Image (cartoon, rainbow, N blue to C red; front, side):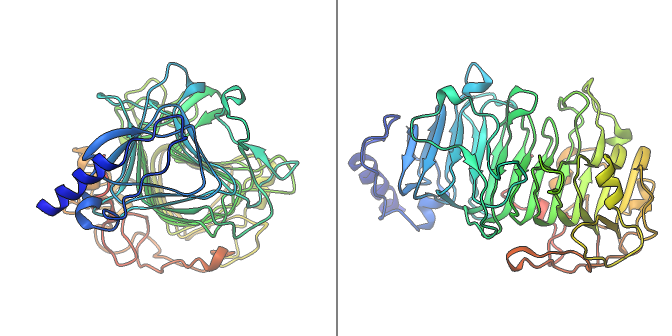
Length: 466
């Protein structure tokens, strides 16, 4: 241990902090890289401002707290972030100036945390609140449904973009690899410049299935938790917790594979007016090009009696609209006024109620799910008999609405785990296609996303906060 602190002291003395001018050489922590002590003891040295532009390769080390004071753009090369690293966003006076980390098209991010040492993006405020800073944005070269095949990412004021920075996304590389996002927590982010022009906790634009996305939590954001514009990035073990708007938002032709994903509402949090859904999915600017998320083992949790303390109430557990197709199996949705809503003629017409294992990519499927709703279980469609409308008790969860909110994330209470036998009609894993980049769905005997492939309650893992 003494040797470890000596190494840190030498490193802190030898390497000066790189400030916002971004002109000083990158520091070299090769003595610290990879050591368990350095990785798991974050913020041991003075905070360091990140520059406006990171061009080329750069590593962020766990012993230092990094400050996002405004927007930091990653251009070319790879930004590597050590397990256990903490990055804090500075609160700004206006949403258009919100601090954010933006990995541009052509650059990559290697942010591979661990269960014991997650990478944390959070607010720099002492008392943290939703919207304190902007969030994390990753832009890629995969397909998007726009008239030009590319788009400028939302939430950016062009006036403040540095010269030479391209903040567009989209291309024609289905297997585009923007890097790795694993064991990451994003807290108190989001910035609403105006409706339809926002930064979210995690924003992915045109990100392809060569990218690794797993074990990511987005919590207490001022807009959406996860918003994915186009591309076909796959994901497992994603948690959206009490974000102000939608927990998961799919746009511009997103066509990825997702499994073991959870969204949970906290009744005491303020929610957006007339627009708070577990899933909101929209198509693109071209009528022949549509979004089609392929989802298995998702749990969408609303509020007891669908009631939150905010004046703005919840809407839909899952809302597929504006030319969005979908395939959804083995999932549980409850605690919203409407469980599942289909909107727009193309979306409604795409729904196939009869082919249990259908694989047509121009069709939508909703089989082997269990839902509860306070008003309407299924809006504008009739589900197959394999999907049932239940009471809360009929969902057969250990504790669908625990009196103590923390018990959602306690492995001992395992509130969102099955109470015993699988929920009604069991599970079925056929028809979950196409599979991008050889993605594989793990077969389970239980519905919902709270248990991992081995049956463990992953919501109780140490990297998750609530």
